[in-house]
Image (tube, rainbow, N blue to C red; front, top):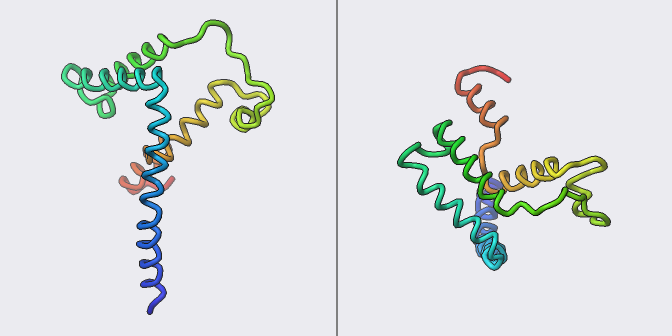
Length: 141
């Protein structure tokens, strides 16, 4: 048996084993999110914005004007949940320290969390899109 055949069989076996585990993990996470009433309601509201934005403005991820409308709507929805007071950095929390470092801000941690979530969801990253477009035009970065 060739090494390439062994690699293909190994990948298929991993897919068979890993897929159910990933589905259970995703279902578990989704159950946690849906058990949080406020997060579920926020997600439902964002879904409503997504449905209602298309007819008057187009797809939010294809048309810049629609994107700005979508962003304003999501920020407005988030604003409904904004706690009062100033943001206070968590103390004695090693996980928060990983996101924040010595002088991190909520924006720093949010960008790190968004980057991780974008990678996990296979979202196109701005640099990757720029590099892809340059390659399509035959320009080297």
